Every structure is written in C-alpha cells, then in structure tokens.
Length: 234
Ligand code: B1M
Image (tube, rainbow, N blue to C red; front, side, top):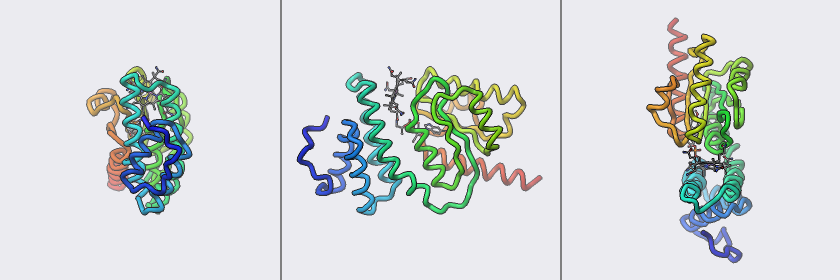
C-alpha cells in the first residue's frame, strides 16, 4: 500500500496526513513508525482514546478488509498486529491513568481455538481506564481456565472474546458449564468479537453482547451498578 517511505519525516506531517501515514505504516507492519506517530499525536494534544480509535483501529480495519479479500496473508497481518500492539502499549498506561474510582472486576479471555487478542486487549485497556480491575487470561482458553480464574479472583464480570465463527460457539460451552455447576448467576457474562451479534449473545445465555470496547465499558458499568443496587436492597 505505502510507497517508499524513506524520505517521510513523520513530525512534518499535519494531523490528517499523519493518520493516513499511520494507516500505511500499520498496513506495512512498521512498529517503530507507529510508535513514533503515536508519540507525535500525544505531543499534539490528541486524547489517547482518539488515537486508539481513529488511527490504530481505523488502520486495522483496512488491514482486515484486505485480509478478507486475500490481498494480505497471515504473516503480513501478524506484522500489522505487532505494530498495532506497539502503539497500544504506549497508550495503555495513559488510558488507565484516568483516576476513575474502582468500579468492579472482570476476568476476560479469548476462547479455546482462537488466538486473536487485539480486540480483547483493547477491551481490557478501556475497562482498566474506567476503573475496573482486569485479569486477562490471554488467548486459547479452555473452560477450565475460566473456571479456575473465577474461583481465584471472584470477579463481578466474566468477559469472553471470539473472532472466528468456528470458535464463538465455545462461549456457550463455558456458560453451560457455569449453569451445570449452579453458578451462572454469580457473574455478569459479557461477550464480544467481530462475528458475534446481539442475537447470538442472547442465544448462548450471555447477559450482553458488546459491539466494541466503549460499549463493553458502558455495559459493564450499567450491570455492576444494577448488581450493587440489588445487593444494597436486600
Ligand atoms: Co484472523 N481472521 N485469522 N488473524 N483476523 C479475522 C477474524 C477474519 C474476519 C479475517 C477475514 O477473513 N476477513 C477471519 C475470520 C472469518 C470467520 O471466522 N468468519 C480470520 C481468519 C479466517 C483467521 C485464520 C483462520 C486465518 C488462517 O490461518 N487461514 C487464523 C485463525 C487463527 C486462530 O485464531 N486459530 C487467523 C489469524 C490471524 C492472525 C494471527 C494473523 C491475526 C491475529 C493477531 C492477534 O490478534 N494478535 C489476525 C487478525 C489481526 C485478524 C483481523 C484482520 C483483525 C482482527 C482485529 O484485531 N481487529 C480480522 C479481520 C477483522 O476483524 N476485520 C481477522 C481489530 C480489533 C480492535 O477489533 O477484534 O473485532 P475486534 O475487537 C473489537 C470488538 O469486536 C469488541 O471490542 C473490540 C474493540 O473495539 N470485542 C469485545 C472483541 N472482543 C471482545 C470481548 C468483550 C467485549 C467486546 O468482552 C466483554
């Protein structure tokens, strides 16, 4: 996508040009350039969330479309993901630094068979930024991992992520196991990932499907407030 970028001085670009350049650099998997551009936008007063959504997620959407269309392949997408993570790592402490009061806690992980973690990481970052304590189980989690973490951390929320149509049904395996063990109602179960939708969330018995990280935060806040009110009432 990008031409020969040797001569480009990122700091000389205006905001729009820089974001366009970040799309190209993400596409080309240039982690150092992405990190530098993130720093430049921060220095120009961009809010971390705006950088995350407009520059990084925006760029990843283009990568996703070309991956789907067979223009990009796994190794290239891995490089793009690595560049995205470089940018996210700079933003993570800033997003978490909002001084928000402690809202509750969440255990989250990508389900068994699935190694996509960018969206889940974003949700974790945004939840931490909103004042939630987050235990991130990483990728490829069998039901046992979730159960162990629920026992150990006793969170308010169980979050699950899946990016493949072949792995999203595994969320039901986890929820069904909680039902079998009589502990489904101990947790607010939130699910997300590109192939899911509201209907799927309902069908598998989750409390809510979250379209993106911002919705995850709002949904988590609403459910936790409801839970605390119910506990206070009796
Ligand atoms: Co994969 N991949 N991939 N991939 N990959 C998709 C998902 C795909 C849609 C691409 C395509 O064909 N267009 C397609 C799935 C098709 C399908 O199932 N219908 C696909 C495929 C097929 C595959 C492989 C099978 C390819 C192969 O090997 N032939 C393979 C599977 C490996 C496996 O998991 N077993 C594979 C591998 C990979 C890479 C390793 C190369 C890489 C992952 C790197 C990584 O994550 N560390 C990768 C990537 C990067 C993608 C795309 C391009 C981008 C995903 C992403 O990071 N998006 C993706 C195409 C796409 O989605 N457009 C694709 C950005 C991210 C911010 O968005 O993850 O949707 P997203 O998260 C959002 C929301 O969904 C939501 O909030 C997030 C932030 O707003 N959300 C939650 C997500 N999880 C949540 C949990 C919550 C709440 C909200 O809990 C409370």
